[in-house]
Image 1 (tube, rainbow, N blue to C red):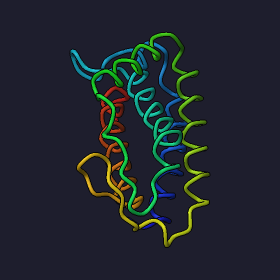
Image 2: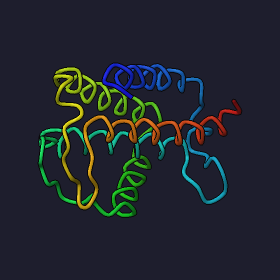
Image 3: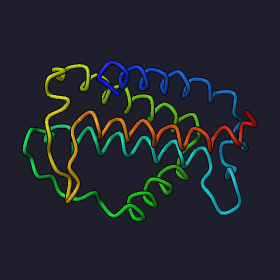
Image 4: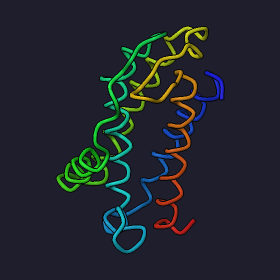
Amino acid sequence: MKKQQILETHKNYQTWLDSLQELNEEQSMSPYAPGKWSPNEIIMHLAEWDRFTFEERLPVMKEGAKLESFPAFDEFNAKAAARAAEQTFEETVTYAKNERQRLTQKLQEIDEDEWDKGFHIGDHALSITSYFTDFSQHDEHHKRQIEQVRGS
């Protein structure tokens, strides 16, 4: 994916978030499968990764940078799920839209020639392009889960 394609996936994600208004509160709190997350938890999970990326990753994604490894996934995700339990689905979706919007805005400001410069997160060699290509695939994975609840 290139910069413009990634920005387009972010725009599509925002549109998809808007479409989730058709889920009622019961659907939004129902796991997509037994023992799995609800749409509310999934959206908060995605929003918290957006927040983390905006605050902790994007400012230091520079050529040759050596970034710390990712946080402990289970702990990070459990905190996101707990936060989701404290608010309505509408509040979670609004938060997610705001987090993705500020992340997208920052990405738009990065010159295209910076997108393929390499850096490391732990032992993983990445670029802004590869990081956000993975990010988009992660979004799609979770969108499919929510679509199971919606019945699409």
